[in-house]
Image: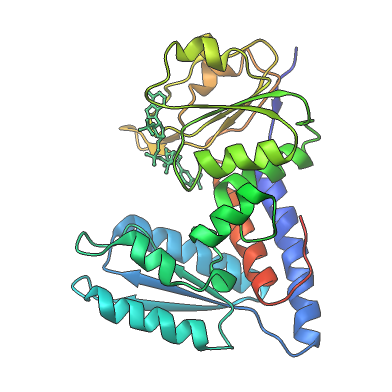
Length: 284
Ligand code: NDP
């Protein structure tokens, strides 16, 4: 059996082109989609993520504004700035880069963003809409995984889907998305007993646990589709995921590599959300 590589680079590039087209259409109506990213402090990883978002926005014609606030900014100042941006009709998307410094309450900050501009999809209104099957912004990483599956022609309806990890930004919304696609969904986590028995039921296995190369072939059913959300930089400076790719690849029918799998999809889905926030018609 030949294992298919699910190519996140190619699929994200395809979505970027679709976004670019829609941005052109909006510009014909006098609208330039605008994303404002607020970064508090100078976390080096955050700076890399912000740079990637800028590059992708600029490529597709989305206006990108990077607002940097010093690490010691007090929370009220940040909340006031968010409230101003909520009222600013030239700004369509607002994103506060996480993690925030320790003296800030991430939940309070996330909730301050207007749900209509919450392009990260982290606001409780958007998270709730997803579970109710209503329209709203969906967290970019799980939304990206869904596109990988759909655009690779992988059937979800009626199949056993196991999501390992239950974070608010990946695992939970991932489970809701697969359920909405009529998958039979199980969510596993650190308290799950006999994890292997659970994951071995999966036709589609999504792993988002934050542990390098944790899931090897012994967790995988022959012929399963494996999606690796994890991203880690090893001691050898190479990137790896939560799945032991070399071992898993021998067992599954399709798998995402790291890098080049889920990673590039996150930014692509952010762009899509920005265009939607600006009124663009792009329904993936
Ligand atoms: P979190 O740390 O928030 O959540 C990890 C989840 O995994 C928790 O629900 C935890 O369970 C579960 N878990 C941890 N250890 C085990 C274990 N041994 N067995 C079963 N479940 C376990 O992580 P995130 O969801 O934010 O991220 C997950 C991974 O995805 C990370 O590697 C992160 O870097 C990556 N990531 C990649 C993105 C991308 O763009 N490619 C975007 C976002 C994240 P419990 O709830 O019980 O503690």
